[in-house]
Length: 576
Ligand code: URP
Ligand code: ZN
Ligand code: ZN
Image 1 (cartoon, protein in one colour):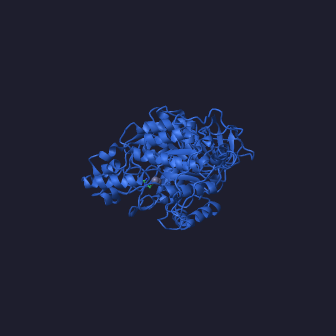
Image 2 (cartoon, helix red, strand yellow):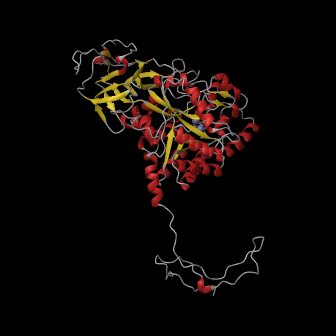
Image 3 (cartoon, helix red, strand yellow):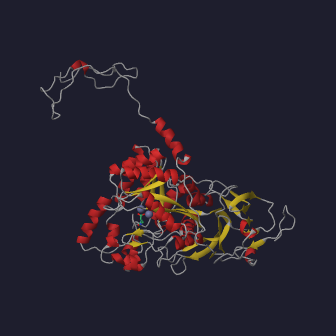
């Protein structure tokens, strides 16, 4: 318990991680935890995480991490630390960047109600699971100011957040004012990503022309365009038919929007964005075929990113067919979980191999009573599921324990890639000197069983109910404060900070600008056409009949590079 110090006598408060539900005892299990009080003063400002294995997306090393005033100051061995430093003994544990959940909807007003997990319960639960930052969506109503929506979300979040957060803003309608507000949001409010909806017809859905306009605007502003990719027109048509057939239960939700409805929209979004050289981020990738679109477009060189979520990686859509209405409705979200039970493994493979990049949760939770708003009509079931608390464990279990990814890739897909794509790296998503001290001390061997009875979220249901997972966030440090100690959450509402996300991200735009230059259209230099020109009348019709074709000027092949007549061409025609 003693340590060397520049300042002579050293007082260290040592906290020993406890392994939860672990079968075999390890030497450090027998040490009793000492002084896990949430200290103040120096102990609060100085922290040493000692003896763990530091994992970044590109390397692992056995190292200690010294933190002061919320920032990582030293990473290495035999560190010199000042007196009064608090110590977390992390032997046998992985020391990783805290998770970044790229997609949440805390307390979102939606489908006549409001998500039950707010910025307090939602971010507290995030910390409990090892996530130290969320990215939420400010979604204006059609016709509403984007800036007003953004400030409303900030007003909701700031007093309540227990972890850091950033905001994506929804472009839920289109006008010159929207275009102008997007600029203000990027220049003055730290927003670098905008979400466009291809579904939710009659509320948030944009048509192709509006999508193109919004993509063009994102490109001009150096922002990242995000899409909810589902064909809302098809969904509306299918829902009507299903209700007419008397299919009113949650299975109707899944039936109304089969995979190809997601894949078509994903493809369309990729094409539209690529046509205007706008980088694209596909949120909540739920199906194999949508994931295949993202992966094949990336192979073609498109600047596109795909975000599967904890739900699509950890469970499947067979639950829509469950006999218990509440259970089935508890799984309703859009795009839906797919009934093909091989989907989660498939998405995990793509995530592990780099075809998909980040992981969110789309955490948007509703209680049984709220879901029951749609008890007689599946189109009225509020869409949304949990995940913010369990994402890290579910990905560890299904990704690392299954042998699909190593701990470095786990870090990449749970934090680093998000930090890079949203331009907050290496402040976030890395354990390095100068980075924010957002850290999870992960026990890879401990297990727990996920349940709504024990989770920290406000919602009364958990889509991962009964799943046994390895990997527990035993200690979580957010801005240098120990907010989870041996599984106990000690978060304080309002202690999280808003994280501005700057535009023209080199991780996104660097390649895009080069790609645009390399593929720039090139004019063909040629002699001007000097033959006859048809005359159109006032109705746009040709006047004076058809002018006979002059055979000698009729070429079927283009000019040579030097501009001469192509010798492979001939004025001879079988027609004479
Ligand atoms: O079902 C969902 N996904 N609810 C939240 C809104 C959205 O589309 O992301
Ligand atoms: Zn969505
Ligand atoms: Zn969402």
